[in-house]
Image (tube, rainbow, N blue to C red; front, side, top):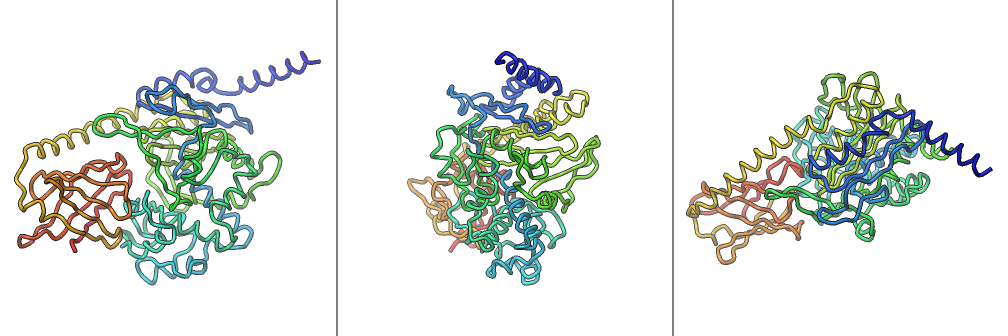
Length: 500
């Protein structure tokens, strides 16, 4: 009898394998080893779900460069903005249950909510918050909010200080603070924090036993990947971001084993293990296109941001996906209903596009498209762009090395500077070394070195913020302001700090 059961199990395994494309059954491990080396990715994990079965759940490489501990399918990664679909799905469940309407005004739930002007404040809906159309440009405000000591309530309050770049509902602008605000509707309605609600509503019934929402939970776990970035010409480890304050926008920690269950539920109309975990009507709500995105390429003509998902037409199917990026990690979670296919790719360096490339590679494999190495196609421009950035920084450092004379004594630059969105920054001078310290990022500082024309080169203590120019304004022999910028990965906008 045991032999019969063993034969049946083997037959099922062989049959399942035979249904998968050769890229999955024969080539994936070789591909990952080769492409991870090309991108200098220490560790990654991949899950593929097909027809209700997990056909790949695998770790590749190591948790930290230079060490030997391998990544497995339970290794935690910070999944960043892949968290957003959990927030929108939670709101959509409440919408279907008629506990809220996504088209309710935000002030109905959060009376103190304010945008830059009264009109947009009063008409802004929960839906507006989660499809990125409140008028701010992409990442606007993240310099102040990301990894800072601002509370959730303070970040919601900060929105009133953000001057919009676009008209309300006129253009797409990716806004983490808006997602946080939407998530703060959940405790008002349910009496549970966002963290507790997504845990009870999704993590528990979907058996996502390794998944959590806080920095503290990640730190306490022994099976987690270390993040890496590129700084001063080499790959370096980077501290984990504590973004508890932006929870609904991106604080979830998870692994491919757990996220396979999440996409399996998405593909089975909200069911998991034979139980209806999420109303299908709620999932449908999150998949409605809202904001057009640029996308016209070979095989695709239209793309949109939905609610926590992006979508596009692609060679006769419609993938839904969302990417995530935080210090040292970039990730993607995807499902394709027509193919009954789910894909999860997690990586532990923020300097790669393999996560995107592999997603498309797997979709193509199941569509039986001709093989095209998306990873290599994106690696060439990536390296070209990095080389250009390295060259620019080298030129800046050369200007510093020439030791141009300061226009004023170093002490003239010292003082407290204030930006209406961020708050205070202190410029200090000690033995002719000039540094800037940030009120809401006490663990981060910038080293300022003069490079000429009233401009300093600011080298931040974290690779996340990078190396940027910091011009001072001088009027009538007195320093009046400094403009601070950080890496585009965090925020595209410059912030002027006025000297007090």
